[in-house]
Structures are given as C-alpha cells and as structure tokens.
Length: 346
Image (cartoon, rainbow, N blue to C red; front, top):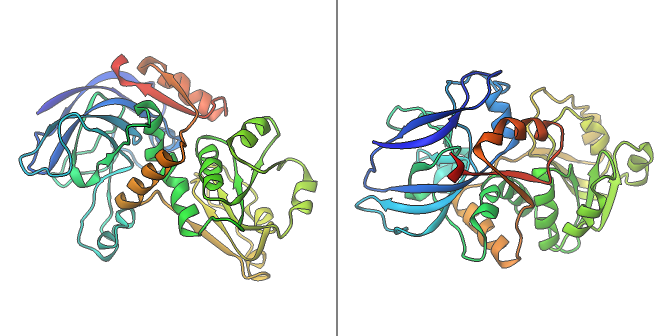
C-alpha cells in the first residue's frame, strides 16, 4: 500500500484537517501519479457539505488532478514514468455497457466510479485529489500537453470538459449564437471555448462586475440578468444557452431567450429542483437538456483543443491550509476564477 498525505473533512460542518490515506498497490494496468496540483470545484463543496446526499466520511475531495507518473503496472502501455498526466471526475467504469463502448463512460449504465465519494471495483472507498498521490487505471488517465502548465491543466479536468462537452455536442460554431449563464469557474471556461469554436458569445451574469474579463476571454456581448430589460432585449436570440450556475434561478425566463429549436443545457447542479413551466418550451419547440462532464476520449480531445488554441483557466494557487477559506470565497463568488491547491504544501 502507498501512503499519501491529504486533506480530509469528517462531516458536513467540519473544517479540513491533515490526514494520511492509503492508495492501493498497483494492479497490472494501474498508474501511480504524484499529484502536483488539484483544482477546487463547486462539486467538492456540495459533496463535502453533504448537499447531494449521504457521504461516507472522512472524505478527501478533488477531481481536477494534474501530476506526474511515478510508477506503472506491468502491463501499462499508454504511459511511462515522467509523463505529465491528469485525472478528472471518474476513475473507472464497467467498460462493457453500450455507453462505455461508445466512449461515454460518464453515462455508464452500471454507474461510473467517481474519483472521490465512490466505491472502486476492489470494494474500497475512493478518495480524491486533495492529496499527494493517486492510483488510477491507465484508461482513465489524460495526457497533458507540454504547453499547458500543470497548475493550469488541473481545472480543465472538470471545468474544461464540463463546458466543452455540451458546446461540442450541440455544435457551437461560426454562425451560432451562444449564451453563457454565469461567469465563474465553469462560465469563464465556457466563454473561452465557445469563442475558440467560432460562435458569437454572450455572457449573462447577475451584474456587470466581470464584464471587462468576459470580453477579454472572448465574449462578444455581456449583459446583467438583474436588469429586466435584458430579457426583453434578448428574447428569442440564442441557438444555445449553457447554464453554469449551481443556484435555483428562474429557468423559465432563460427559455424565453432561445430561438426556435434552441436548447438550454444545464451543467450547473443546484441542490434544489428547478421549477419548469412546460409552456416556456413548447411554444417554440425549445429543448431543456443536461450534460455531465465527458468521456475519456472527449476529455483528451478537449485537452488537446485547449493546447491548440492556447486556452487555460484563470487560477489562484493556494496552499492546503487555505482550503476552508477558499470554500467560503467560492460561495461568496470571490474568486477569479478557479482555486488550485499546490499539493506540495500537504
């Protein structure tokens, strides 16, 4: 067994503490990764606080992981010691169902194995990237191109793929009008990626506080949703809306911004159900959809796309002792735009 230093939380109202966790000995297709950086995702906060259901504490969150391969199993063929790699929101799946065979492991019919808060095929609870080491089967490891710094690569493993996947699936491209709701960790990545895909990009944010940033990231337009005239002016404007916020917003007001056959895709996951007025959809054959990360093949595609287009998140690197403060700041929308933990401070 491999001992890793970590930061763990013991309950929904607890602070993070220093911990040691055991990582399994390498199986034949496993890779041992020395984690260098781990991003903080809003999902980490929801889970650590027990907002998405029962949690098997103690919990080590973190599914935006970037590091270096330090050991490989006897039959590993994809990676070697010294490779720069990442791990995202899942570390395994059944590999046999229809969705897995299509490269959509995130929708595994038997349930993919989450990087933390899950149970692996050995029957052990999974623990995430707020730690110094992790062991993962090679098929769930992503290669990080040399021109993306490891600290910048980490948030791409969730924030990047979570926004890339729906933009790719619903074909954001030249001639398409795309709106991004929210300008946080997910939203700012969605703006950059949609712009690189050639779409006309509009940001819909509560206020204009981040307008200068949004335009710099590639947005063509920026509107405040706190202003009623925004919804009047933009009615029927967008082919695609990506909602990145994890709050219970008036989703029906946003349906009114869609064109005929337009689609609103939720990637943010609020803790409360959203109230949908079906009449907001059927009047213009609009669609309301959801999207969850991406498969391993698409995640690698996203990473390579970001490398090609020089897309990286805006980050603030913190020490392991600053996690509790970072959680508070995320909830207060006081981060531009993703916290990344330097795991050498464990």
